Length: 500
Image (cartoon, rainbow, N blue to C red; front, side):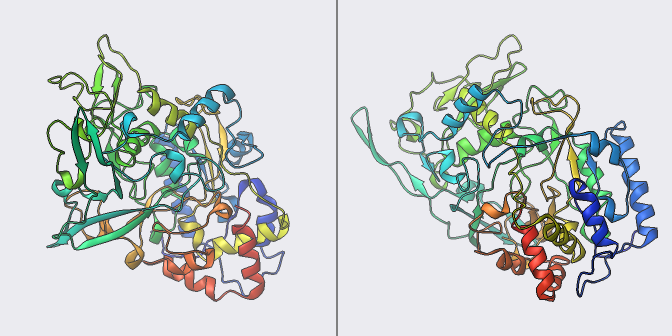
């Protein structure tokens, strides 16, 4: 059986030999704990990993670090294309630069009430929440959530506008001579989980991960220590990406995005954020079906504006009575007859921008040796169990047009973990138990040096503060290990983290 050893010793394929040398003791790292995995555990991991690859018809999507002891599929990692860009915000190699520039311009556009902004919203443009380091980064904005936890289950209070509480409204405006006022959304009195913050996440490299099939999660899980195997979450594809044969209307996909892993693809992420964060609703077509999951206006505390107020904004209304195109949907494709697949223009541009953003390039100015040793320390104290530092590899022919058989690192398993008291207590769905409300998706550390706040709610303002803010076991043990490091090893691990 797999044991519960919490200390790993492993490193990046890209800097394999340097880190391997450090892990085997050829370089003396002061005060380091024993980072070796029990051979029986390695045997079980290898068996599980090989089975996961076989389940993917032999397609290798994740290569574990060799210094973990699993010397598997190194040839595929070495053969994969390296993604090389100069700066944060650069597009992936091979991207159509004119299309990318147009998509970036749409991402940076500020919306107005005439465009459909509102009736309630958190910001009036994508870049307002995703601009730190470069367009597409994270933000300092903290959205707010509420809900009710009683009798062991979570209630999103959707009937009262939950769990997201938008921070702004369209206020007072005139429509056809009628004065209309949209109030700011409030936390309802029956909520007992209140003012829980969510920080916007960086988007660099997400198109590479979106290209991976569901099978990638099993390959990662097979190589994680037993006490920190990530939880994958299968969710409905409310807006399937028509370019991917594996996504279908009414189907499901393992979620990839969102702090609670509620979003299965970048196209759904785009439409969801456009509606929930900016209040701009859209209708699209996928294989002849009208996609209306993000077509209905969100009202403050679910109370609609008075009749004659155009649904809460000043975007032109659609003819009433068509269930395939709601009256107050702001931007529509129209009829989906003939098996049409067409993504609404703005949503398509947001998707194009996000899926072609390259991962942030590493900064090795502190010295490769010091950084490589820091990665060893990072792994040995237990951080790499969740912030995995293996290599992801895209499929040969990705459906979304990113480079095929390209290698990349995110330093996240892209799965959920129990964060204990550090979590926000917010469930993704009605009926979630306490364990579900404590789960948070492992944040991507690639690009960490660009961040100005940390954790899901931005509570920490330094990397050290973020490490000590971790909750749940074994994350608290990893934090304790960090605090017990010698000065030399702390210098090493901080050099590694600041290179990301």
